[in-house]
Structures are given as structure tokens and as C-alpha cells.
Amino acid sequence: MRRRRFIAAAIALAVVVGQPSSLLADTPGERTRLFAALKSAATETEGRMAENAIWHWWLDQAPTARVREAIDRGMERRESYDFEAAEAAFDIAVREAPAYAEGWSQRAFVRFLRDDIDGSLSDLETAVDLDPDHFAAWSGMYHVLMRIGRTESAVAALSRAVTIHPWLKERGMLPPDPDARRPAVRGTQQEL
Image: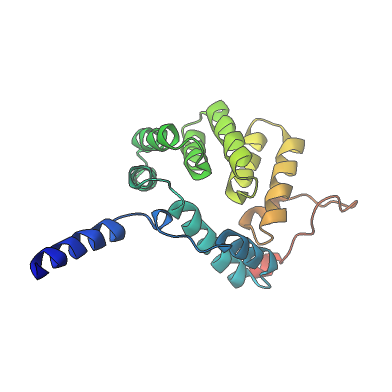
């Protein structure tokens, strides 16, 4: 009897440990807390720490273990410059979790790397529709729109990203705005 309980407990633990943390209870208000920390970061270092925490949180929001595995595999393949396999992995994530913004954002990046500009832009638009605070998708949109010569729209996308993430690395790419119609760029080149 004790042995059966031990085996049952071991199996239960293995199931829990083997799942992405999004399948476990999420701390109420975690997203709000993470984005508040990002917005209020007083230094570049604090901003990077908050950004990294948000990246982990975004990845942990994969709705199933299979989707998380597809995202991880796609990122691994992208880092190895196997963009075709990376896109195939992200296709699985998007197909199985169409409401998961990070799947769309990751696929957009690899599509951009493969010069599929229309596909990349479409994926980024979906990502920001699903998660309007996805600063990486807004930043990616800036790069795509600049590539196709839509400068005004690109600057608007990057301004949106910097509104969400004042320490975004690309913030220095924003042109001066004498009318201050966008948020002030925090930090200086010396701090980068």
C-alpha cells in the first residue's frame, strides 16, 4: 500500500515538473507586476532584468507542453540558422495555440529572417492584436516596416514599443520629435 502511494506520488510529481509553469497555478497579478516593474525601471540594468522576467513569463504562457516544446525547438533551430525547421516548429505552435501571441511573434521573427516580409508583418499584427503590450512584436514591426519603406508607420510601432518598454534597445532609433508626440526616450547612448 505504501509502495503504491509512493509510486502515485512520484508519477504526480513527474507530471507536474514536466509541465510548463503556465499549466500550474499562476500568481494573480503577475503580468501586471512584471510590466509595472519594466515601466518603472530606473536604470538600464533594472530594465533588462524586468525585460528578461517578461520573456520568461511569455514563454511560460504556452497553453500546453506540446506548444512549449514547439516554441523551444523553433528557437533552438533559429539559433542554429535552420530557419526552415524553425518556421515549421512555430507553425505547430500557431496552429495548436492560435491565441498564444508568443507563437505568432516567434514565427514572425523567423519569417523576417527568411525574407517573408508579408508573412512576418501579418504574424506581428496578429501578435499585437492578441497582446497589445508585446513590445517585442511592436519592435519587430518597426524593423519590417522600415524594410519596406513605411517609415512613418515604423516609427509609430517603435514609439508604441518604447511606451511599453522605456529601456528597449532600439529606443535610440527613434528620430527626434520636437512636438513630443511620443514618450521621451529614457537613457543615453553612454548607458547602452
